[in-house]
Amino acid sequence: MAIPSGCLAHVNEWGTRAGFLLMKYLFWGMYNQRSLGLATAISLVIANMVGSGIYTSLGFQLQNMQSLFAVLMLWVVGGIIALCGSLVYGELGAAMPENGGEYNFLSHIYSPFVGFLSGWVSAIVGFATPVAAVSIALGHYLHSVWPALPQLGMGIAVLAGITAIHAWNKSVGARFQQVSTLINIAIMLFLIGSGLLAREPQPISVAPTTAGWKEIFTSPHFVTNLYWVSYAYTGWNAASYIAGEIREPGRKLPLALAAGTGLVTLLYVLLNYAFLNAAPLAAMQGQLEVGFVAAQYLFGAHGANMMGIIISVSLVSTISAMTFAGPRVSARLGDDVNALGPLRRLNRHGVPSIAVIAQSAIALVLVLINQFQLVIDLIGFTLTLSTTLAVLGVFILRRRMPHLQPAYRTWGYPLTPILFLIINAWILYYGFTMKWQASLWGLSIIAAGALVWWGSRHGRRS
Image (tube, rainbow, N blue to C red; front, side, top):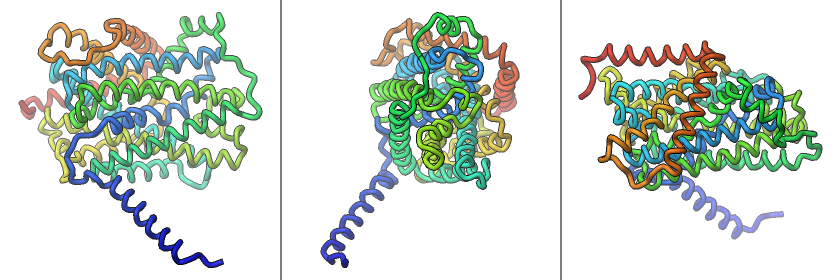
């Protein structure tokens, strides 16, 4: 049956309008220098947090923990840590609304040297390393669906494409980030609903028990597994790295940090319960692609293949978010050291394109090394150390820097930062004693940063 020409005209008209609106959404602001809004800041927090950690951590936790209640409490405790940190970072960012995150905070509160080391760690471990880990996980998921595809090759290809986007234009990158974040949240909600409504739920119990509480407070495995969880929550402070580009940072930055972190915490707890409800524990123990395993039991072999593709798409959002935020820290390093000066150069669209490419180059090297667990342990130690110093700085900010007192104050002060510091000290102690190799690698990276600083003492900017 022929389609009436009038209908075709309407289709063409609406197609043209839809294409125009899409292009306007993606490219509006190409030459507009207005600051980033609340939506971009929140999406950056969510996308930096939601990545390979939630789809890869559970299998390793089930290897050495007995109580499922304790396993879920890992994610609750991780969320509490992240939320406490975000509340404090809101005050720090409102008082010092510049790009750089910990680099910015520690430079003002302690010294430029401490700030530089923090920025050095963030540039290498805080962003390049998670990008590498997510790229590796993405390759694993795609290889599970299509075994003929090279695991590392697919991760490298996606990394290259996202690098090209964010090295080109800030406005396009921001809109790409918002869209990919919405897709990411939709995927998580779909998985949560599917797991909770599984046709053949697993006979599990997550009710609190004496054995479960004992495992939380006495087992070293609970603390060391917080490394995996802290990796999954990495990114709760993401909006602070672009504070200098957020409109009304004193109001919108604290809101973006707290809202993004709270939402992700809820999604994480629900999604892990959905995985436990969907697949047998024995099938997930020690498995990297737990999302793929759960999907096999929920949707069958063909449905699981499709879910592997969907999860891979969701991981793109995390690579994008860290490629968006991380180079803002690297660019600030060029403000301190002349030898790193090229990192601070902006292209004609206001993007530190050299810093974007440099971060992705470091991530590429780590992808080729392909040591996933070492990468995660390295992130856990170094970033915990850096955020601990930043949160500790809120006490110094209030007592010694009255000229920087912002309108926003940390909710629950001083209990909020004290709780964060206690739990982080717990993680650092057990992490160093039980994962000392990764901790030594982290200290080596910090030492290398110190050598760069002192070696360029005649080439630092005033």
